[in-house]
Image (cartoon, rainbow over all chains, first blue to last red; front, side, top):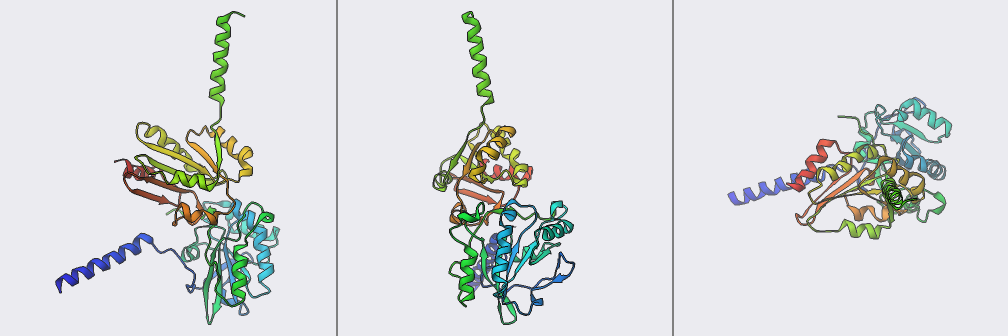
Length: 205
Length: 163
C-alpha cells in the first residue's frame, strides 16, 4: 500500500511537473473561449456575444507597428469583406503595451483604423489578458472561433497564408482553406499552422 | 616609383580592402539550415533568428556578438539567421551587418512559407521573433527561447552549457 502511495505521489508530481514545463499554452483547437469586453476604436465596448447574428469570428491579434501586421493589413480587410457576409466578421485585437510601443497607443489605433477605413472592430487589449488567455504570441496571430450553442469554440489557429511578402505569390490561403471547411460544417482539415510575426510587446513586469 | 614604396602602397591597399570588407551574408534554403541545426558535437551552438525590422531582435544582437569575445577560447559558435525577405538582402541586411560591424556568421533564410519549417526548427517555436536555440550534442542539452534576452539571462543560460 505504502509502495502504491509513493508511486501515486511520484506520478502526480510528474503530471504536475509536465504541466509546469509545457505551461498553459493558451487555447487549442476545440477549446471553448471565454468572452471578453474590450474597447473599440469608436469608444464602445465590444464582446463576442454582442453580435447575435454572428456564426463565429475571425479573431486576429494584430497591431499598427509590426511590418508583418502591416503586410497583412489589406488581406485582413479582405477576409472581413469575404466572410462577414457569411456570418464570420473579423475582430482585430491590438495586444501591444502602448508604453513600450507608442505607435500602438489607443489614439494611434484610432488614426490607423480611420485612415485605412477598417470595416471591423479594432480593439485594444489594454491589460493583455485576452492575448494571454488565447495564447497569442505574435502579430498577426489569427484564431477562427465558431458558435456552438451558447459558446464559441476554436476551429482554426495560425497563419493567414503562405507568403507574407507578396499576396500575389500566395499558393495556399491557410485561413480561407479552413473557412471553406468550417462553412461546410466540417472541422478544418488543416486546423493549425504557424507563421512568423513580431513578438507581442508585453508590459514590463 | 621605387620598389619599396610600391610594396608599402600595395600592403596599405590590401589592408584597407580587408578592413573594409563586409561580413558576408549567405542566402540559404531551409534544407541547408536544417543540416547546421542538427550538428551534434562538443561545440555549443547558439542560433538566433532575427530580422532588421524586429526592434527587440536588433536590441539583443550585441549580446550574441559579445559571446564570441567572452568565450573566444571555448567551443561556442554563434549563427545569426536573418528572417528578412531575400529581396531585402542588398537593400537592408548587408548594409545593417556592415554598419553594426557584426562579427558572427550571418545567413539569410530564403523561404516564403514559415509553416513549412517552423515546426522543424523546434515544435515550441510559435513564430514570434526573436527566437534562440542553444544546444550541445555532446552534452545532450538543448534549450529554446521565444523572447528577447536580458544580458544576465543569456549569460546564465550559456553557462549551463559551459560549466
